[in-house]
Image (cartoon, rainbow, N blue to C red):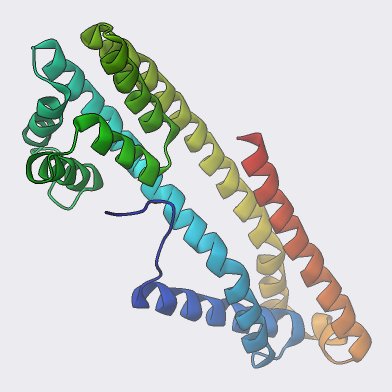
Length: 248
């Protein structure tokens, strides 16, 4: 079964990262040092810096997608349980319920199909497969739902009412998290516009007045100043990304 806490880089990912890093490094080397070849070294350093962030971005993107799909499935599970189905039957019927919306390659459909197969072929309990899914995906909302179902099963509480209430609470929380994520993406976009401003200014000067930047590229002192400016820009970018993550 799939582990949603990791992301294995494919050949396409490596080509994308290496090509993007090399292009960005060569462009930076040309803008700051007037030496595109030096940018290849910058590209290698950029690749080492971007690679873990790209993996983290892919993990978070996939988990956000899975969370929104799980929210939809919660409503069908709640409806089926209210109609007298067991939890296992509700999970199985959710596949057909959302078949027109999600395809066989969608994460939640693959997970539901795997749960049903394990319950039928491996005689595993519905609670156990749900808890395993919660452990693999690392989503707190899935863990909370599995815990509610398990506690109701062990204590003999009203499972229908508990699932209805859990679905309502978890659905509202997921919607709030989605809105916060949208705000975070907007702030990150604004930060990247600010990040691009120095490079665009240098590009404008490079095209319109190349002699104006000659002192920064023709002497060791000028290259040190360029390196210091580049380092400060990189530090500012990292700080903006960190502040956005802490704020949201």
